[in-house]
Image (cartoon, rainbow, N blue to C red; front, top):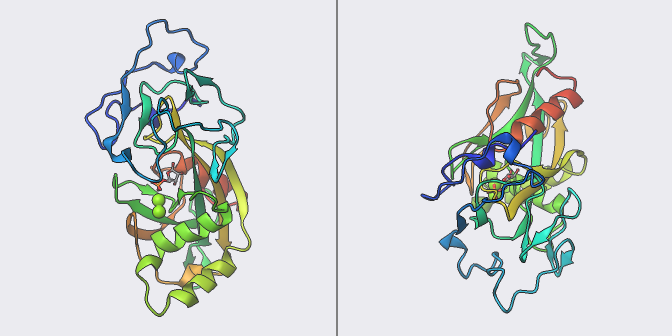
Amino acid sequence: MVHIKCRTVLYPFSEIRRLALSDDQVPWTTPMDNYSPPDYDSPVLHNKPWADPPTDSSSFHPKWNGLDGTVNRQSHTGPYKVVDGRPLNPEGRTGLKGRGVLGKWGPNHAADPVVTRWKLSNGIKDTHPISKLPILQFCAIQRRDCGQWAIPGGMVDPGEKVSETLKREFLEEAFNSLEMGREKKVTEDMVGKFFEKGEEIFRGYVDDPRNTDNAWMETVAVNFHDDKNETVGKFKLQAGDDAQSVKWVDVDKGLDLYASHSSFIETVAKLRQAHW
Ligand code: RP5
Ligand code: MG
Ligand code: MG
């Protein structure tokens, strides 16, 4: 499917308007002689240690499509093209050049922990009246930046292992570990143990509203399932960091989630033979 969430007219956190494109104009292979979208780098990127410099900066010598020191500039989708010193979005045009609010030119790597449990009534799995399948619940956070419900994912720090990011972001956003007191160690140990066993369900491009022609989100999404509601499934959740709320949400095809997150949840529902 062509990307769509990164084509909404107003670019997030700005007054910048993307150039409107039809679906057929998205692929770079469709000729568009006069394609000249606005070029936008958000002022928030200025002098930030986590952001790249502008591509024309004399001190910037990135290793595209490779591991560049501790920064992974490789795409999960395969090698991307670099035109006039800028990486090209592998999924096509977005109606905006530059980086927008994303720190890195090219892929910006994230990780998404999809933490699930069964919906129980009096200790018995609840089934859906129509599909007759058991209802799965996933741990969802409400994003502080846009108010949308989402998987509690986040960016992979330079040099960080994806397995660490998955655990750290879940602890920060769904357990508020950054503000935990005495319980911190016990919670980290419990989540750490639970996160030892996960199933990767997706690795690739994310249709994120922040994407541009030259910078985009990619993720590794992993499912961690508490089959008996005996570990993470029974702990009290508390929103933290870039999450303003957190709750267990019933999995169903009517979910309207941030970026491509509904499609990750659909994959997990099918993997667990749950209602969708
Ligand atoms: C999405 O943005 C990813 O799937 C991940 O959930 C998230 C990472 O960005 P932040 O939550 O750090 O803003 O594209
Ligand atoms: Mg975070
Ligand atoms: Mg996040």
